[in-house]
Image (cartoon, rainbow, N blue to C red; front, top):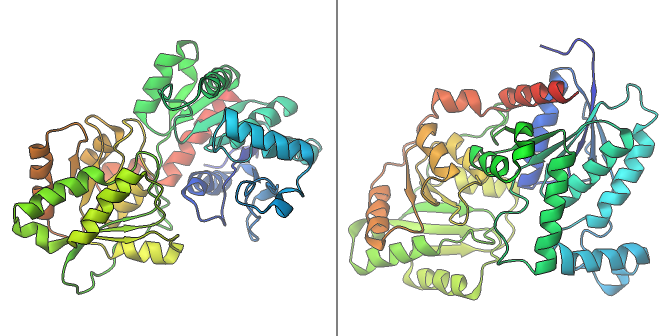
Length: 416
């Protein structure tokens, strides 16, 4: 039901449509369905504005976005304070985090636009990653003197003491504690991450709510007919980075091939999308290619082509071996395709929990389990039919964007 009196919410989202990145999908769903329920929405983003929206998009260009990939002549066009600040912050404090100086520019420019607005914004919602969105949202909410809601699509700091330098870890941990103190509400996208934060920040535990990622029922895609081919295809279409690598699966497949298992000769693993793994991961993938059960396409795949690849796959591969609390956004796409899912994630992970209830056939291989157990699970998976299944009513009800917008509206009403 629409709100009795329209209220204005500012959303700071570094990524937003028409950008074709996974980080743009969640804020876009929130904005779309909150608008329909009566909210006035204004978006602050580094993405270019898209015409035809029934909400306002303030596009603030991030001139430092391609700082490290730009030529010297392009980089020199940045103001000196921004050029050197961005270089220092990205190199020594928050490695690889884009838009850190953009956050300051975005909050300042947006404040000038929003302060005279009528009605005045009554809250600011920012969605992370990247860090710049939270920094901009926090600063903007302080300037407008309205509540700030921080949405964590990924954990900001999660046991990374061994991965970050001392100064990076110290800076990140201090900043995370400031976020939990300053935010009027904290949103996570899995129960596991919410529990972790409630334990880490008990004084802020009452602020933490969960709104899972999900799907837009109006744009969700189903499966396409399978093309005729000599082998069935198990595909992962998307970027491979960080701990998301297929090494455990490829090694298990190698063992089945060496043992002459008949099902292994009927399948092929397809890895499509940019690859940012280490040399050891690369060598493992190359072994699979040489043996003929892996194909690779490490270019950036256009959206329409990537969608078609996944829709025409006999099976769908989900890689999340490095985290128990994160759920990749592509899992929700997979569930709508309905074809069997093979996941690689730890025991008791959020991925495993969701797969067990979504209604789609799946097998979950765990990084820590014995090789014989992994091989047995892979054998079971390879024997599954590729006929698509329908998601469970529980999944359809709880993970559609309309339901999640209602959850967010309830949180906003409480903090306002």
